[in-house]
Length: 121
Ligand SMILES: [Zn+2]
Image (cartoon, rainbow, N blue to C red):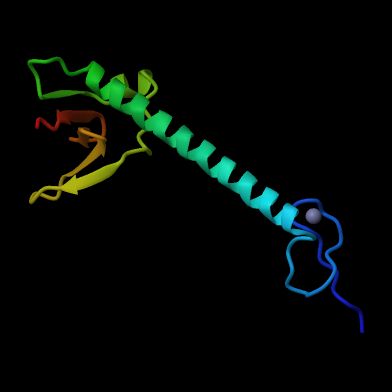
């Protein structure tokens, strides 16, 4: 019978002991978890950056006097708006979905037209 050899997830050395052990030592286990945490906070920061940029782009088309505006969606795309990132969505009784980047939302009126709305407190 051949013993299954597992390699440390951190340093790739052979792990001695129990078959389900993932790390050769406590320091490798801690190092690996710390690295994971750093990577997670990096990707979270990247998502927050995209959401903030999306919000700025939406706000760019609204001025203080308007809480909503209709425009061609390509204006958003041209500014680098990423339609796949939003913080939350709401549905009205008519089945229309508004996607929000924090307090500013947009609703697709048809394939090329978008309605930007801002939540006023
Ligand atoms: Zn190790």
